[in-house]
Amino acid sequence: LLNQYTKMVKAYELRGLPKEELVKTLNELRKELSELHVAKVTGGAASKIAKIKSVRKSIARVLTVHNQQQKEGIRKASAGSKYISKDLRMKKTRAIRRALTKEQKGKKTLKQQKKDTHF
Image 1: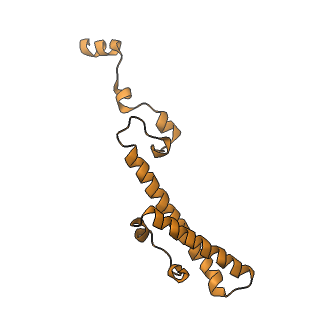
Image 2: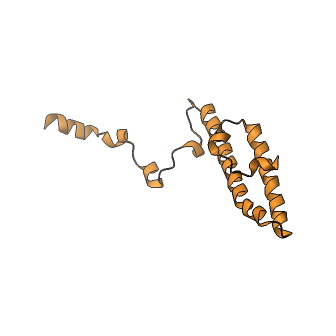
Image 3: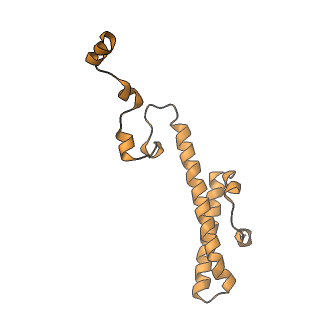
């Protein structure tokens, strides 16, 4: 089971997996990492110590795919609703978020409209 993760896990391979499978993979990788940390402390083989980095990166990949899937699910669930939750809104910058919309910028006062039509 542990030999399965000697190579790095690929993100595109993880995307097809269901949530339960991802969580299981994550737990196995974390278990393997803890075993590798123990090997490092007890003076294990150099190959095991070198493997720590790849396992950490694999854990990060699994978590990234899991979080992306969760966010996509929330997006689908909230599609069509009046309000979008803050973590799904566009980040941009504070100034851009507070700026007037194109529609608001284009609006004219009644006085300006009269001026435009008559002069």
